[in-house]
Image (cartoon, rainbow, N blue to C red; front, side, top):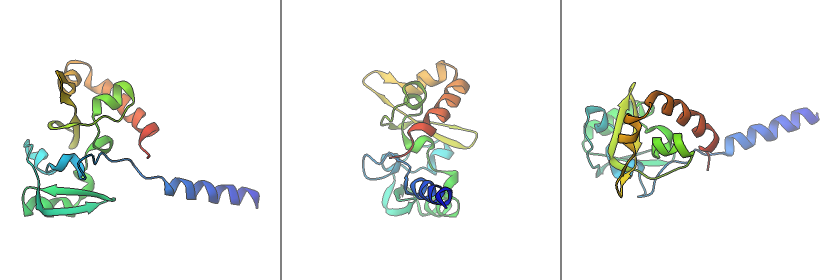
Amino acid sequence: MKTLFVFFIAVCTMQAQEIDYNTDKGVAAEGYDVVAYFNNQALKGNKTYTTQHDGVRYLFSTKENLNTFIKNPKNYIPQFGGYCAYAIAVKSKKVGINPEAFKIKDHKLYLFYNAWGTNTLQLWNEENPDLLLEKAKTNWEKIKYK
């Protein structure tokens, strides 16, 4: 009976944890259209075209992009909660992004910080991107919950 109780508490605790998404401006990707990134465009979203997924609000530049997202949101959600992929990899820290600094790799969206003379997308590309990605995945598993 004690084992069952411990298992029940562990399951309830795991379900209560929520992934920490970067919504510094009240929306994902600072209001940029996450579907447009897959067309190699960093476009600001429009409040007319909005939806929510997993408690996060997303804006889109067109109705078509909104509908594309609604059909399969997991294909378009930024990796690492929308935080800077480089900072997750190197420092295991959640750092804001510049929504115009992005990379699509293996049909996944990665966002980066780019301000005050530090372009982490450039650093990501100059260093070992494959190794950084593996580090980021490992670090994210440790820090992804609120």
